[in-house]
Length: 118
Image 1 (cartoon, helix red, strand yellow):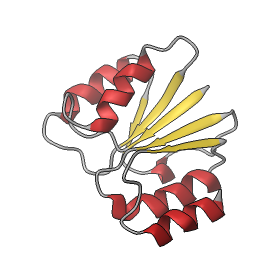
Image 2 (image 1 turned 30 degrees about the vertical axis):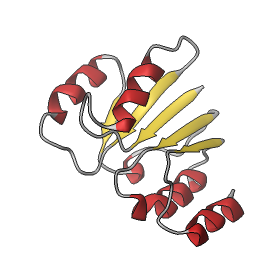
Image 3 (image 1 turned 45 degrees about the vertical axis):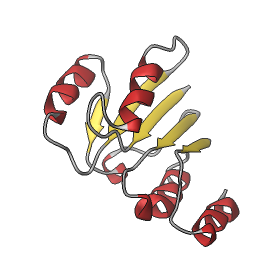
């Protein structure tokens, strides 16, 4: 299973980072990319270690090619105001599954919109 982590956050602090570290240790998972548009201080060291493992690190989903294999997008963006856009973009890129970290969206309407899109 290919995985794209969207929104990683700070090493040892961000929820996305904790999920990323766990995903990297799973034998049947290929972490294909990490998308982080707001690279916090200290993020560069993480990027170097990820790139050494073959993980692509980009600032936007638009920087990735369309998914051709079964791909899980793991959305853990710190600004849940963008999650509807990220959700839609992941679907448009061919994601076969999406895990949306809580709270997911600031409104129930946005969550319902994501349900409709799925």
